[in-house]
Length: 507
Image (cartoon, rainbow, N blue to C red; front, side):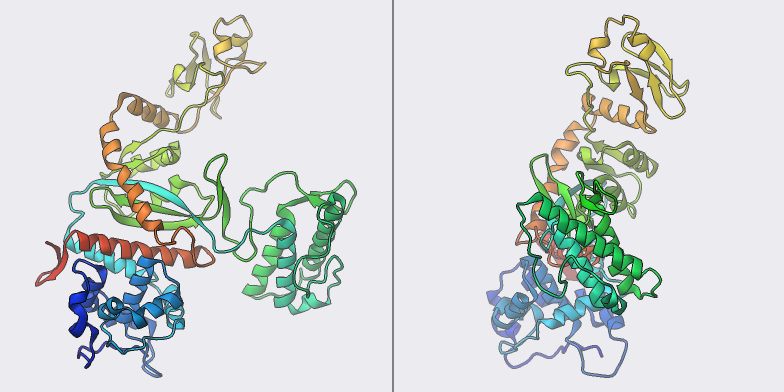
């Protein structure tokens, strides 16, 4: 059953004795004064529908600890210790000085209940409601979009480790798998198999054996009726048994593939984490946090977490889905694709987005913008003045003109057959974006307002939040939502958040 907060103070109430020690305009001081208005009991009533059993920890206490934990990047054990021995936390949670707090498993239990509820991000939602009530975003018609890579909480696994781990899991959760003969490794033993790892032939033989064992299991269990957990284990085994290998020189043999599979699973412990290049020389494994920020206040209006290889543009469009038309959207070229621009234009938002740089076939040669395209007539004219028809698939071929002594050919293409231009579906959007960037239509706004999103991201990843704490998109999305709620609450407090007779307001 749900625990209720007690409005009566205890003899050693921390707030009564030590409230003056907690700095004003701090999150702890604000929660000490307003946690019950911010996190009332009825807000969490649906998590404990039964009236029987031992009462839970009061909702305002647990929510307070979750917010402070998210602010400081603490583990559950560290957060509970903070509640036990830090005066400011006891003041914030309304506890007595001698209150021992609660067991760290309570936080895990509450997160599970929240995740399985109809409103898993209610802590973020209540802070967003405070933002709306204060009217701080009234008349603010700019949103800056950006993303940042987050490191995962597990080690990246190589092909051999993934195969062994997936086979072990199938043998553990599917009873029928125990009767399938496997020979490449003792899967009941811990650790990697004995192998001369510096011998390519030995490694190839091991991979071949592991893949054959995987295929044997998949074939034998094909007609077995499976529950959800077993089906997930079988599906993961099928995936890892095929993503990194290719047929060997002889029939029925396998070897590590000489390519990287698209959307490659990099860990069987956390199958949703992905590999992502931050630049040509730097990469990370994990997830990506996407945010939309109101740049004048620094408030994060929306946030989403995806695997690290997810594209920024579509995620950014989703972040703005609940916004009213008329925003000026500020973003870098990662959000500059034609499809993203078309969606923003359809939503009636104004774009201050840096265009994707053009690639030239010849250094210092001609680019797409040196060609004249008539989208209505479906024709293209090259810099030399030659006209050609654009095919239904968007291809404009100048090959017959290039190969008849065109004087500008060397500046146009290095292809032996001549120039072939591809006109994308959203070509007009991209041309207009490049024109606006060259002319500086939004240069002042871009320089003034977009940098704020970088500051918000620095707040987001501070205190160890560059690394996620959980496995999977869903759990880490909920953690991100609480983190954003805590950051927004701190920002509101700095802007003068208070509770008056008419509700939440900024002083």
